[in-house]
Image 1 (cartoon, one colour):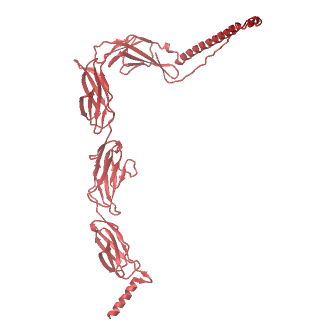
Image 2 (cartoon, helix red, strand yellow):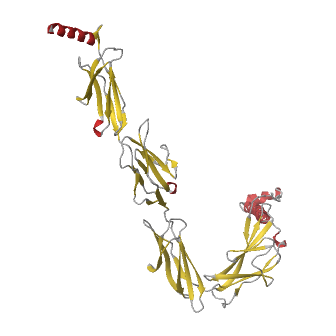
Image 3 (cartoon, helix red, strand yellow):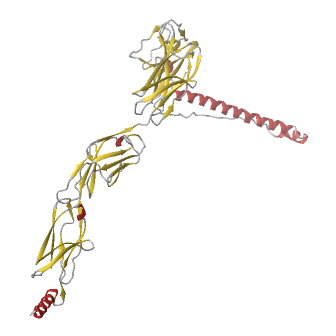
Length: 473
């Protein structure tokens, strides 16, 4: 009886494992990823097979997870950290195994935050900025970056993105602002997110070379110099220093790009070369030196006149400049026919702190200027000679004057050349008379010739067009 049962079992197994030469090949299906702690199912069966078989679920190199018998079976698992690996099922009758399914355990992301280099995120133009998006927990992640609440495009030339890192190789003002990142589990169903807090990045401007100047004023008992130093661009705070002949006279740290310092000075005394130094975190720059020498106004004062012409060579305006022989801080006053001119008028404009007078509508008359020290109201005015400016005297255009001079010069050259040719011919004739006696005896038969030169000249008209022509008188 036992022998019959064994024989029947072998025949049944033969039917099960081989039908028409086709070997049984199970197929395993299941998820490739699942969150830690979640339930998952793996299904195993032989396509087209309708009889019960015993299936085993294995992990890795052979760890048996479970075994069930049915036409198709389902294995139920709860995901743990050790669940990750390769899974396959096997038919116990002949050991045929399915293809493996790779399974990943996904840890839900939590606790996203940003870390910067440098830290804190304060840097100067041209320096490197590196940001990393860190998470307290989470696996199988992708990252999205935001700058001023706008998503950062991976193809942007302003940044380099690499997984959890954002890098700026050479920072500029455009890179300043608020940054954040979002970490996401790479799941098709129920993806989890975690976003960082905002991180404010400061990109400071490089300090430009400072410029130093000074003015003087009287405080009643003494003369003071007000030194002014400033940089055109940069990010404060910065430290300014006033140096005179290399010695530090004043130091201030300010929240701006300007600096003032008041120091006593003496008229006529050369106090040396002053410079301004500006210091930032990574920079130290010096201004050009300025000589601290207050020279009083004195000597002769002259008026330099420049006439301005339009494109039609018509006088458009006149520019008068008051030039004293010496004086560091002069103030100026103008007069017409010995009456003071106001600072502004319908026919004139004062420029360059009153040193230049522009006549937009020339009024004929005698113009003069005077100068004195601006820091001393009791100083004596030094006056120039008065110059007669007449609009009618300016009717000839510069090109006409040039043409007349050129024609006169050319006429002199032509007349001189004619005289020279006539004189040379006469000398040759005189030399021929004294060359031999025979020639003298025969010369009576030869009539004497008179040489004349008829030269005519017609000057050509030269035209020149220009927007503004300046002639200094």
